[in-house]
Length: 114
Length: 114
Image 1 (cartoon, each protein chain N blue to C red):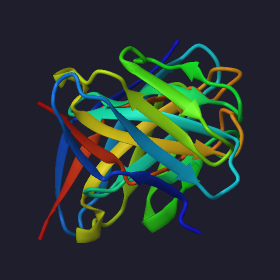
Image 2 (cartoon, rainbow over the protein chains, first blue to last red):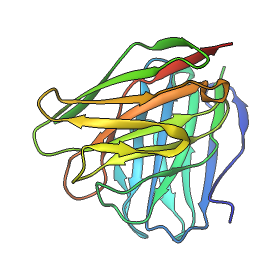
Image 3 (tube, helix red, strand yellow):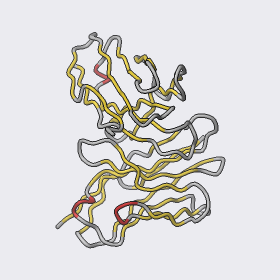
């Protein structure tokens, strides 16, 4: 049982390049989330998927797109990377989108945009 | 609207001393409150959570937190710090209906001095 896995672990991009961050969970969870973590700002929600087939914007969605490929996988795409998107990106999942439920986090992807 | 304030971005304690990490929340409805821990280069993991019922909540690794409605606080404590407690700690609140919108605090880095 691997929990939540993310690939890649590290990535360096040039401004304007595109890339997709991959996330998968093996806990049969319904809900999945993408966060970014920046120093002094905590975690901010980019997009979430309450259940397979649905996605919604979070707090900071500009410059990102997501795909809920199936129940297990939720990818985050940067179409044209900008230096402001330099951050650590975390994927998380929860059993159901209930407000009392624990979220399980992946190990993160450290992205640098030059 | 909901928000979380963590007082002190960095806290240092001596090994064996009391750990106290402060968290105050704002919520227009009864909140659910969480403490997560992040070890270096890892994702977040749940320490403990308050939903309803007993206001003193015990978590993993000897940590506990008390929900005080009158003070809108949910401070995290541990009687005796261990070197392995060095990490970043995030308080979070969830009080919206529908999907699980969790608002994270900005985090407190705990340093344990031998």
